[in-house]
Length: 377
Image 1 (cartoon, rainbow, N blue to C red):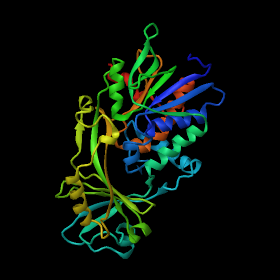
Image 2: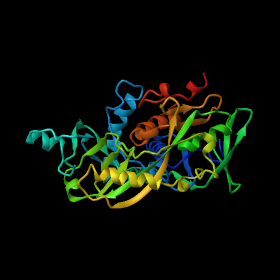
Image 3: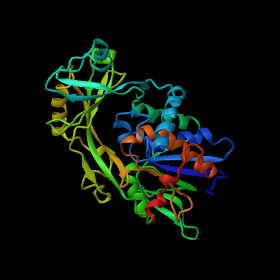
């Protein structure tokens, strides 16, 4: 134990995964004597957690090991919307959109259901899923962290440079900062997205994960879109875009799937590449122009840009997140590799990891398929 009688859990990463774990630790701890500190290098929701689309689909994991993550986490999102008083959470149907040479005649009922008036005449659409929803990831992440802090969690801003270890027990007992400060701990959770690979290498564990660096654009919405919102998944076009379009309740339209993504290896996450910090990751302006051109051919609405941005999503080689305790390290937990489903899967990840830390097992989801040990075999 640290100097205090409380068990000190340090969560590395102030994104949506780290914030979710902190939230549920503080919520579920009951009589467990525990202190929780979240360490974040920049600010809460600095990377993908503040720049993602926030699309939520409960049934899109059907037939895969992530099915439970999809379904359980979607229900937890609805609970969080109420618990945290989220303004941005809402149900929104999803359309599949494609270009067509001839306009197919459609009944008035079908047009009303599957073709909002703000889509261009040159595209066709059909209902893809009417059980989908959305949330603004920045609002969710910051409110998760704020709630955790209101219940006693501490937030520390600083860049981690290494660990101190107890060699006899093969455990981490301190977090080293670039400022030379050392923060004592009893257990740590590595939830730093792509940057988790840096920490795991300090522990002699090679995490086979890539970073996908992508640009996204936020446009000003229109009255027509605001009145009749749909999420859009669009076919690939001549600009190399396969747009995903998410109208938000705050008068914005979030657009991703604009092509030009970069695949980053662990060795690419460094200062020379400008990827050692979330704030250094810059959008590709050529893809912004491509997206704006593509969007104008799909939406009969304004393409006034509010913001351009970029982030790095963590993706393991098997496209399945890594959740659980590291082998050969009795007090180190890992929660990363969620790729494009990080926002959706965050609540189930946070709750199940909190249960694992507090009780030694998870009741929320079966963590076995996501164990870090699968990469050690």
